[in-house]
Image 1: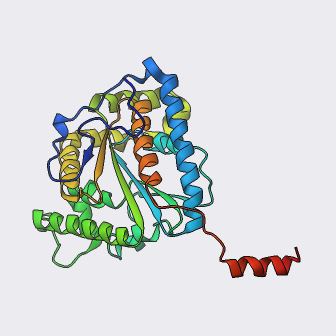
Image 2: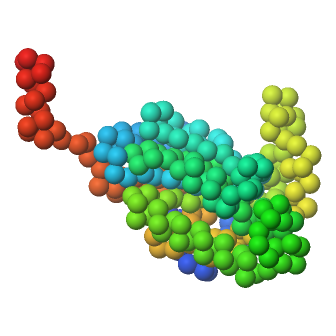
Image 3: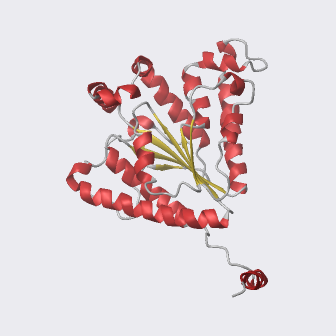
Length: 292
């Protein structure tokens, strides 16, 4: 059954340390039964987002940052394409975070992320994000050694205390951004291992989609339990009332797009946005200059 606008199913929004991924569904609704209605709803939400973004760009007091995390083939790219359809490129910014470069490794791990923050007035999207440093690196702690941090010389030095410090860094950084006018919306697109395999096979079968798949992507499936644990720990340690996580059942792509577009359209609509009004004296000066 299609949810009402802005309505959420249970166990999607998380604000505290109570998440257990294995208890959460990766599939809720088969969108094929009501695909036309779902697509129409996503388009209606996109229209709400577009209108709010124009006000936000004119006002320049707030920024919205949407963070998307998922296992490989989780649907992040297509999610961004559909949810933000028609958004004005002026005032819209995306960033994709892959393996850190040699330059990035010589800075603190949030440095490269800070550089990609959207300015106030912008709607920004992170396709992967600062959370890679508590997800991929948690599964592969040898990657932490490349940062040459003080006191970290072997993987045994990457202790639980180390990860707790990083979770704390992220919580405080996001709270800092809130105080600077940033609304942060964090989404984990939760797919099953079986659905991931199906999508990998689909990419392999269609030649023009082959580029989306690599042997390393398939190899990482061996670490599925470790990634699930890393996501669970990251979400539990960084979900707060001000910056919650939304864990979206993502085996059905269109229904996941519907849920995400509902959340974003509602959140951005609640910001106190409006077009700035010219001061009377400024308006009069313009009239005089234009000789109306």
